[in-house]
Image (cartoon, rainbow, N blue to C red):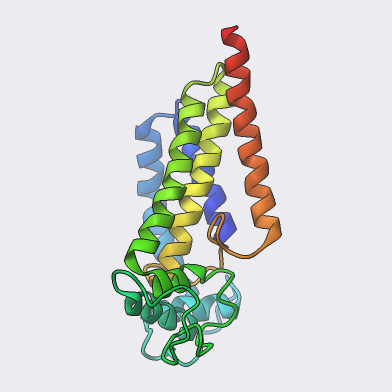
Length: 219
């Protein structure tokens, strides 16, 4: 589900960069919004068959965290606690504090989708902002290469890569901070997982090639 949402946002971004009118985009969004609300109401009904049970449970845990704090909402609630406990500078990298969420194993497999919670706990608000800033710099550079591309196809590819990095980062952080239901999506460049990392590097390789083609055209 999370990957599908990211792909939709990538396509919307590329359509916009390709010249699709804002009126069409906002008009489509205005039509889809009530459909999404209606769909959300339907998937929360008992014995629904639209989405899987565990997906429904994650949405319910997001809407009613107190009732699901020991079940489906356990991971997300502990993530929020971990980020908040880090305060400004964090408890220290690989600290030995007994009360640490990570050391107490209150987040299972934290190196994957909830790595941002560990960053918040160990490095604090400053560490979280540093990661966001570094990813933002990469996104801006990708957009710069796309803006200077010699062909529209290069611009569209760069816009798609930037949208992928941006929205995937947003969704991951939104989940760890409780803004969105738990969708299970890695944080680019940070979460453990070779497939995700290699895929992103391949995308960036294509973008770098677009920049090199532009440089060759100048000569």
